[in-house]
Image 1 (cartoon, helix red, strand yellow):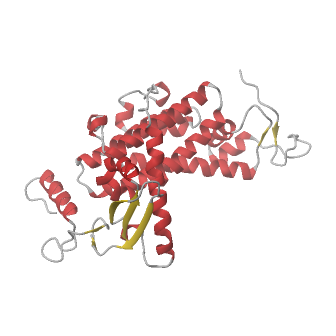
Image 2 (cartoon, helix red, strand yellow; image 1 turned 45 degrees about the horizontal axis):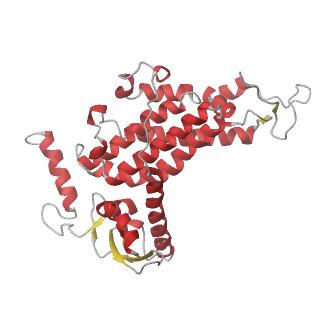
Image 3 (cartoon, helix red, strand yellow; image 1 turned 180 degrees about the horizontal axis):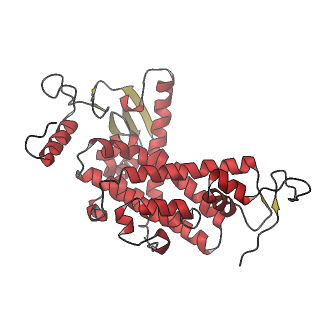
Length: 339
């Protein structure tokens, strides 16, 4: 049994009918739904006096929308995915494998916060996971594969495997805070309902994170941040319209480049640029990023700049990757299908 402090209004005053500062839960439920009340109750530090007011509830609603929108994205991009389509860890791309481990570590920390009844840290962690880890980075770098590759392409299935891990475990982690929303999410994917009739009957699996996964993900983020810092002045001066136009050259010590080497083939997609080059520098120097506008044409389908975009003919304006993806879709559709 946990005992919280007084419930105060936004100004820190105790609620009294005579003062007229009482916030009735049923009023909030009627306006915003019961999950907003639950999120507010569990996102406050119950060990102290807790406050509630219009501005506080507005912040709660904003946090809820971020979580809800993340669920919508995950469900939308897993509509053609079943657990049977999931790839084993060794089948994932290098970046996906590292993020999967980072995601497992983050969710394990949420599990530990639950064990210690630190519900406000769980709420903060869920929002942070949505906005920082998923929306701002992994979902962003996965869109190209999710939207442009053939449905069964291994690189697309790799991204979906990690999204499935996120949807499955994230829904279970959010269920105590968002009892109704998590249940709606669970009922929206047959792969989830096949596992348990309700999210509240599901089991949150333990996924041990590979050693060093979080540190490796932080390293990749440092590369991405350094690249974005180099690109931003060119975007501000209108020399680049988007990051997709940027050709990036990274100069760094050999040891740093060796650490980056396993991700070489995925760097262009991870950095959301047009191309990348790695050059060895002197030992002890800080990595340097140089950016120029790509000379490659933009593919009219995937909007990435590539050297193999056809200039004329049947596939004019399309890159080789998109031509192959359309051919794969046409083959799966059967004889007579158009591209």
